[in-house]
Image 1 (cartoon, rainbow, N blue to C red):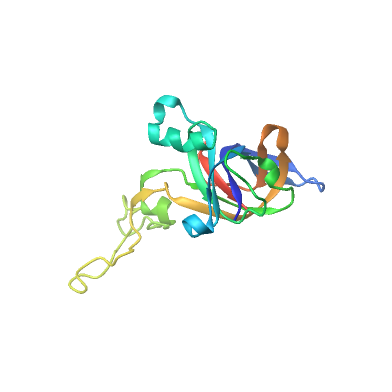
Image 2: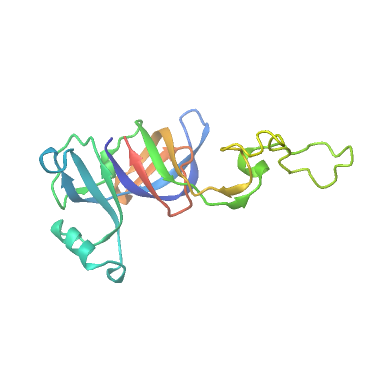
Length: 205
């Protein structure tokens, strides 16, 4: 699917024509530079490699500098491949937020907020012991039993337990585009998208 790379600015809300308050996310989408053109003859598939957000020269290396120099641009922080563009683009072309239209639906991918080591109540929604009867005084958020004893004598794979939470790649599908602000490269979509403020996201049609 065609799309753009963007940066999550934050959340706000808009009122629709009926006066209903709609929560939405503001994304800085593009402009993205075409840094490589994949073709069926050379690579076996058709795609466009897009770059977004300039990187400091000291953070790059000669290999990256040479790659981006072919496109006539500076090194980029984020590079993603997209397929399915109907228009023909060549190296160095810029794709802006005008690629999207108000009212259409998009999929937004990003890395969710990392929450560190969490227990089963926060991580998996366990209810805990709930009642403090029968001498329960310090086990309200404990996981409880995790299996039998002598058989099978092990913990089954995939058992929901405490552990690292967040930091996973998440895709939220079918978010409605509420507004496109072309002069500021902003895209306003309905609902929440994964990631912290200023996190990179990919928006796909």
